[in-house]
Image 1: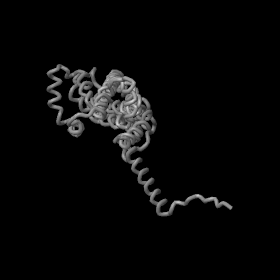
Image 2: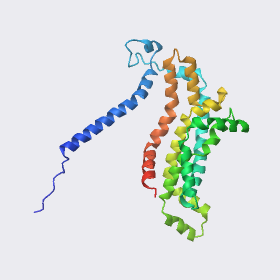
Image 3: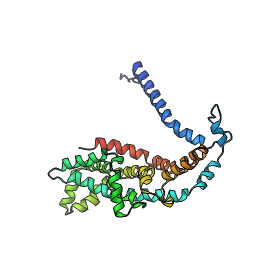
Image 4: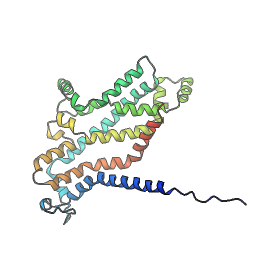
Length: 286
């Protein structure tokens, strides 16, 4: 008579370890989430609740009028459009240039290619504050200061994007390219018709990452833009805080909440793809 094995039991010490790990992760998640929740709650409070002692945790009453007030105080619609089209252009151009560079680093062998790729990646470690002066002088010579070109063109070269797509391209079987070459396809045809369709998930994740980074960018707009009508959303929120920082914290946090809505939507849509791409870029490279 056959013996049916019973359900395997996890040893008690291991279960306790898992419970402790999950509790620690949950606590860490709550700590990370607290500033965002506090921002949302405060954005619905009245101005008098900001100076109460002890501090009120929940709005009483809930004041939704903070959002129309904040939206009407500054040209948020124009700033939204500026941030949106700059982010979209950055995504398109970064995907195109990074994909071509990544394919070259992944498939074209020449003397010193490894060293060149290492030097290229090393530029990722240079802080933005170090390059800001020469970059400002160069853009000033071109007449691009106080122009959105100053935010778009430098973004063409993205070492992280090249590295990520190179890992995906290296995971594409070389046999597919050899088969296409036997059919008479050239390097350009192989790139567009064989390689790019196979790295589409990575390009999608990279597009979301670039969009979020462009939308959040504050340092470069602060340095390069002067005209109010050219301001992006983070820059406009900063100016709003400068004008109302001493009194209207509730309006400032309502403006901050308005500014993060597109980021939340983009992340909720692409979070699974971003996490998968990170895992694949680490495991798929050879």
